[in-house]
Each structure stands twice: as structure tokens, then as C-alpha cells.
Amino acid sequence: MEFVSSPTRNYTSTMEELKWFVMYTKSRSEKKVADRLKENGLEVYLPMVEELRQWSDRKKKVQRAMFNGYVFVKTRRNQLWECLQVPGAVKFVHFSGQHATVREEDLDIIKRVIETGVDVESDGSSIEPGEKVKVIAGPLQHMSGEVIEKGNKDYFLIRIPGIYQNLLISVPRKFLEVTG
Image 1 (tube, one colour):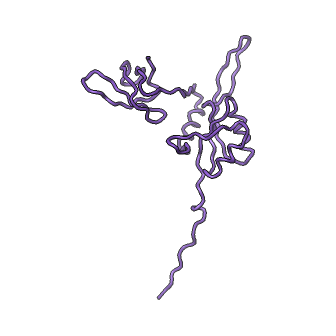
Image 2 (cartoon, one colour; image 1 turned 30 degrees about the vertical axis):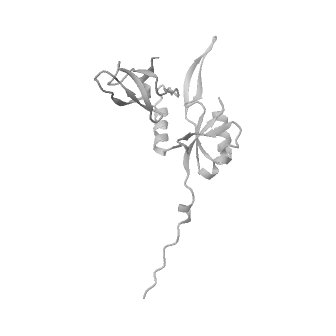
């Protein structure tokens, strides 16, 4: 009988994998927090966009965080507490009781958008269930309805009356305007 040894166990697979977590910072502290995290040896991504600011006596191009109050940190779940010890860090973003993570591919899309130099605005406003909305762009433009259930951050299910039944339609947030 021949004895076959089992392959050597890969201990790196037992370690928790690195993921991009979403950290919330104090107002206007994104850059300082990102710099401090980098000093601690962490990989950090802070998407910055340039905008033209108008003062009474001059105009100036300034860099600002694309997403107010957010920094992306690549770390392990068991190291999140250490990241929060950085001055200016507030908490990690949660959705449904889980720490929010972002895929590398999604960060690549953000990087690509920034590299193009197009004007970028992010809209962190929310629409709550029960609010009346109007579709302001896209194939359903000018329809009105009510937000029934909030899906993920970017999409909402809305009820559009008028055909004797309710239609539940997923509409991107950027196409919705609160009407009342």
C-alpha cells in the first residue's frame, strides 16, 4: 500500500483577506485621515476631483474629496478598530449590519472617471419611502410616483399609478426628484 501525503496546507488562505472598507470621517478631514492611514502602512484610496471656486476677488481651482466624508481603506476586518484610532476617523459604514466593502473593479471605475477630467458631482441625498417623486431623465421622464421601498444606495422602487395597477420600477436615484 502506498501512502500519499496530503499537500501542505496553505496558511495564507486561512488569514482573512484584504478588502476595501468604507470609512466615514469628520467633516473636511478626508485628506488628513487618508494621510495618517498611509503613514500607518495601509493602502488608502481617496478620490479627489478638481473644481473651480469663486471668491469675491478671484477664482481658484481646488481639490476636494469626490465623496464628502468617505475614505476607502484596504485592510482586514480584524484590523478595523486600529484604523479608527486615527484622529478624524469616525466609523466604518454599515449596510444591513455588515461592514460596507467596495470591489476593486468599482474603485477602478471611479479612478477611470476621475482620469477623464469630466465634471463630477456626487449626490449623497436620500429619498425615504412614502416621498413623492418625479422622474426627471431617462425613458420614464415626466412620470410621477411614490417611493415604496428603498433598494441599495442608487436605486429605488417606485409606484406609478395610472393603469389600474401599481408598477414597481427600479429607477436610478439620479433620475428622481422629490416633489413633495
